[in-house]
Length: 412
Image 1 (cartoon, helix red, strand yellow):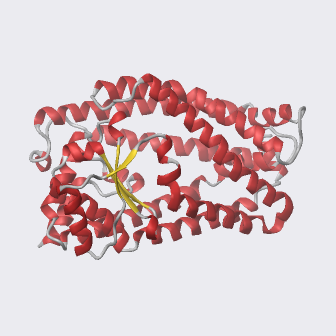
Image 2: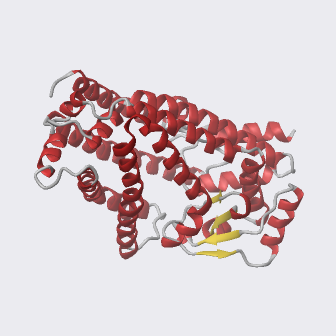
Image 3: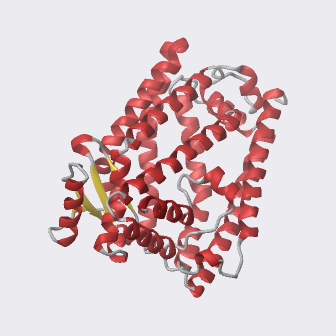
């Protein structure tokens, strides 16, 4: 059990956790009850004090929940419990399809049960304390059960396809698995908002009126064909505002949270949607999709080098090389590469955000976008002054202050 793979897994897992906590500590140290000068026109003093408290509580809660998960997984690794589970399940089946499905089903259900109290506390204690939560306990439980059912159904189908590919192709496994998963990702890009979202939220077409006229007018001006504008009842779960763009071609649609419509005026909403249209016009959507597909291909190729490795299975406490133990071992060993890929993707994403903001500025909506971003950030008690290293490592969007500066430069 205690071979080179075992020690690498422990080292990578531990270093990743420690690094996460260092970044969290740097963010906490940056917090101050004194309102920074650059935020004085954004946060009222009392709102800023509330934001600082919200961020500190979430940071401490993250330390507790993350620490618990780390210790639990460390115990699992040190005592080879994943291998023990594999051997235990083999007493009932060793079928190439049923064994991995059963193995991951047990892990998924265990993970959901363990994580449930933390999610419950975050929603009904932290989020409710600061006025964000609008979900009822009944709705929360329904969402939880639906998520589990979806994970079992969709995840199970995709996993079975990958298992069949692995069993019948072996050497070409990574290529066919890559094509299958990429095809599924494309399918979700087109139909996620039609198939998945309605299971949790109601989407209704935006009514005729001033807002719809303003949105359609801007879309025509920007040369963007748009017929699908929907409003989603996000307020039944949270007071936080949002909007997103999804789909492609005739399936593209813009979805507004009803909370966004409550918090912003017409021009500000148009500016927010102009930003989303900017992503489409600058081809960020397709570039991101291509990057995701390429990343998936790299991941599957490297994964194929580890599957069927007996020593990797032994590092997890197993006695037989298996597809499922290979995947878990690979997930730990892939951590450094995953972090590097994540940094690259985040850097590209931040660049895309600046470009989409620049697109908005071209239509004279700079001030409206800045105003909208301020309102959304303050209403959600966002951390507007995070540590630069945290931004570099984690953020897919520039900070509000960075965006404001760049928007003003674009508008000049």
